[in-house]
Amino acid sequence: MADEPLPIVIVQRTPGLDTGAKDTVVRCVNPTGDAYHVEVHSSAFLTIDDEGTMMQTGPADVTLTLKPGESAQIGDVVAWEWDGHVGLGIRYTNLRTHRTYGTAYNLKHGSDDRPIEWHIGVPLEYTVAIGHRTELPAQP
Image (cartoon, rainbow, N blue to C red; front, side, top):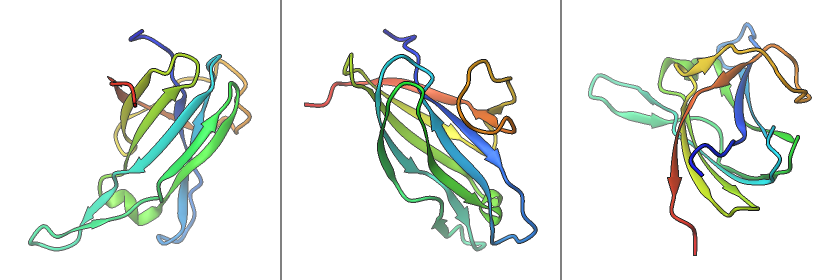
């Protein structure tokens, strides 16, 4: 079903004074009634010279399973990384229905300051990342 609820990505700013310090924690929260297998891939990059040379940055890839009501840290952002694109690609597989969805998140520009409507076990100071979802073919 195309409107199947998915886990959400939240971005918690933890600003520091040092540009080399982590200033953001990224978490995945499962407010649904189903367990999900979650595969996270960073798509962060930064242009580092006038010729357009790119440098890959961002957190390491993460694979985990989230039961209903669980949350886990899936990445972080160092202050200077916000100068470039900061994004995540996440593949969610519902362990009950076996449907798989690919979702792309632009953490720099796609967030929503909506209020909490459930208890997720994290501080209230966060924004919800807005993702663009596509249903993917089943894995063999």
